[in-house]
Each structure stands twice: as structure tokens, then as C-alpha cells.
Image (cartoon, rainbow, N blue to C red; front, side, top):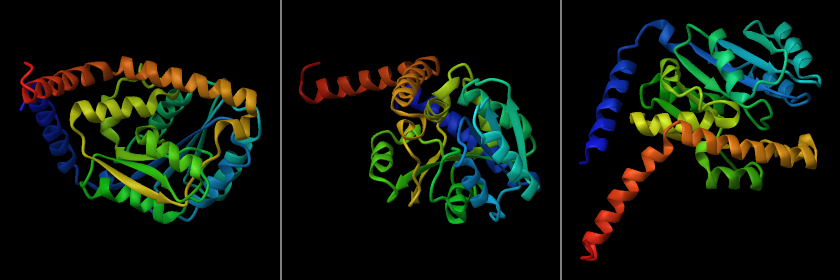
Amino acid sequence: MSEMESDVKRKGQAARGAVSSARSPLARRVACVIPAYNEAGRVEKVLAGLRFVERLDSIVVVDDGSVDGTLGEARAAATRDPRVRVLHNDRNRGKGAAVRAGLSAAAGAGAILLLDADLEGLDARHIDDLVEPVLADQAEMTLGLFIGGKWNTDMSHRLAPWLSGQRCLRSELLHRIDWSAAEGYGIETALTIAALQRGWRVQRVPLPGVWHPPSEYHRGLGDGIRNRAQMYLQIARAFYRAGGLQWIFPRLRDWLRRTYSELNLG
């Protein structure tokens, strides 16, 4: 076992110890954080689907400077469900900043559920499947993956599962990610790199029938393409800032050494 692998194992054991020690009622409280930007007509459906999900103690919607009806829909949902709290950014600050604002409002919860605001097909069983492994100390983080929804979103999760925005994790672990890397669309990458570096147990959870429309669908072709390009740039920046290169290169070096040794090239 390499020195880095030993370090990751020690960090993972420490994280599991911290999780196992949290047995108070507060540790079982679950807060859902939903960042939303120009998701009118979609965020209301997500909130309607969560209305009767008893597993959630609070639901925080962060309107990230939307210029459509997103804020109004979220506030209307709050009148029907007392668990819903709505925050509003005066301008678009990016997904990472919206999530961070939501976490401040969710203080006191033992677990944080992160959901996108444009999900289709979401129901209570999906929420339970994401949340319960964390509450049962079977995982530090769950990762929800689309399956059987729409072919394009299914394919994106097959090719890049680490970019899923549907996750649940212990709230204290969110203090251990690099928030400079989590700016914009970098939040999922920052979480993934932190999990790899610190040895978190991550459980993949299939979400049958769940999907969301591509950016080009609800932003228009031109704006959608620009948004997607911006997203990929922010993901690459997050990977670099969070230390993804430092994580990959030692493993690539070890793989090459093993390969050379097996081929008697070293």
C-alpha cells in the first residue's frame, strides 16, 4: 500500500468515526437544498413532489437571481408547505454560491440532500433511497444516477456519474470541500474530489424514471450552448483547484510502474 493510499485510508476511518459518533436526534434531521435559476414551470413540480415526503425536515430553495417566475413559484410553495424556506440572490451568483447560501439556512441538520430544480419523475422512494444510507451510516455520501428516464440524461450519467447534482451527505463533510473550486458548476466536482481524497464511502443510488431537460431545451439553443460551454469550463477549473491533478498523477505513475514491471521494462 502506497503512502498516499494509507493516508486516504486513515482519513476515511476518521470520517467514519465522526459519522458514527453522531447519534443525537439532530443527526437524523434532513435538510433539502435546491438551487434554482430560471426554472419557472419546473421548480414548482419538484416542490409539489416533495410536499408529502415526510423524511425531509426542511426544504431550502435558493433563487439565484432568476428573471422569470421561479421566485414566485417557490414562495407560493412555501405558503402550502411550512418546511419550505426561500432565499433570493439579487443577481446570479452561480450554483456553488447558491448551495452554500442554502447550507447556511439549513444549519442544524445532520444530513443535506441536494437536488436540482428541474427534475422530472421524482417521488418519495427516490428521496428515501438517497437519504437512508447516510442516516444508517452505510455511506458518507450517496450519488443519485438517472436510469430509465430519458436516453440523453441516462447516457450523461453513465458517462460522467460524478457530475450528478442529486446527492445526500453528512452536513459536516460540506465544511471540508474546497469552496473556491465549488464556484459555479464546480460544486459536484469539488464534492467528488473531496470524497476521493478523504476516502468517503460513496454509494451510487439508481433513480428510476428521473430525468431533467438539457440546458438547450429550456434556455434556447444559443443560450443553452453557451451555458453548457461555461459549465464545462467551470468543471475543469474545479477539478484543478480541488486537487484533482494531484490525485490522478500518483495513481497514473503507480499504474505505469506496475505495467513496466509486468512487461520487464522497468
